[in-house]
Structures are given as structure tokens and as C-alpha cells.
Image (cartoon, rainbow, N blue to C red):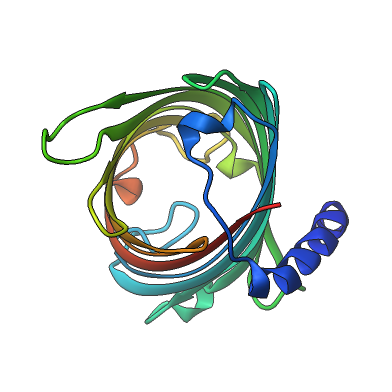
Length: 277
């Protein structure tokens, strides 16, 4: 499974070195499709969670606290109406009590599509490899393939504030898995609202609904999930491409399997550096 990550890892290593000097302007979403650009972004985040569904597979669920530091680096290319994105990241999941399911992950993302400004039509491939300890004990390999449509528009929600940016996304896809029990088909709908304030402050609110079925999940009862989540993210832009966010997320999962019905709460500080190259 390592082979597919080496070319992307080399790119990420270069990006990580460059990240220390990544200070420049952000490109607004509305303007992105009207010009050619290459945008570099790196982020460091630490997710602190409290989850009712601490186990993989179909074992009985349990509450546990989690800590998940993560690093991401990406390049986004815009050429007329065409856009592409390449991203790589590393993630560590650490449980307070159930240490035997601690895991490290390598994740990537390749996105290609058309961006007309108000609309985007995208195809994505997202590989992720999960390792039980370090990066030598392979546990799960996931490959997500999806198509998504995004619509963006601007609206004045509060008369005394700048216009808010709205983005609605509809996606459908398939997740190939090794082992096959995590194979699934899914559809999702997310609405993201970005409301700017004065002096670099902004608030992002993003509700999401995801529906999934697991055709290879073992057991006598078919597994179908519906997951509702809400992200609330206050953010502050320091200028020169540096932004600090604090993401709060609540997730409720409803499943035909009792072991997969539950809730997760998380708080994630995020530091981003962005530069237009």
C-alpha cells in the first residue's frame, strides 16, 4: 500500500519546507474561476474528541476521549475554467482508554474539475491507509471515488455586515476497502455559510447529511447509516495568508446496527498558511 503514496509524499516534503515562508494573499472563491492561479496551503490541526463509537468492525461501542493531531499540505491549480487540487496529509488517532485501537494514517486527495465561478463540477480520488502502530502494521486501506457539484452565491444576511458567501455541495461516490467490510456507497449534502465581520473575523457554519450503505459488512442485518453533522468555525485572518480557526463539530449517527448508532463531539484548533504562487 505504501507504493502509491511515495510520489505524493515527496511533493508534500517539499511543500512542508516551503510552508515556513508561506505568507501571501488569499484568493476569494468567487474570483478563483476568473483567473489563472496556483495556490499553496498548509495546515496544522489537533482534534480533541469525545466519541460513543470507539471501535472498528462490529464490536460493542463505548465512550472514549480522542486526540488526533494532523498535518495537511495542498496545491490548487486554476487555469481558466479548469481546476485541480493535490493534497497529502498525516493523521494520528489516540484513544484515552482503548489504546489497542490507536492508529496512524496517510491520506491523499486528487481533485479535477471545471469551475465557472458560481458552479463547480469535480471528480475526486481520496486514498487513505490506516496503520495500527507506526507505519509498518497495515490495518485498513480505503480508496474513495466520488463526483460532486458545488454551487456558490453571495447574499446579504445581515444589513450591517459584509455579504455572506454560501456554498452548497452534492456528492455521490464509492469507497473501496481492504478489508472489504468497510466498502460503502454514499451520497452527501453539505451547505457552508461564511459570514465575514470586521477586522479579519469570520464565522463558518456547515451542516451536512451523509447517507451510506455497506454491502460487505458482516452479520445478519444489513448496515445502512445516516449521519448528521454540524460544524461551527470562528476564524481570524491575520493577513499575509495566515489564519487561525477553532472548529467545533457535533455528529449524530443513526444506523441499522446498534453498534454504529451514536454521537461524537470534537473541538479542533487549526492554523493555516496560504500563498498564491
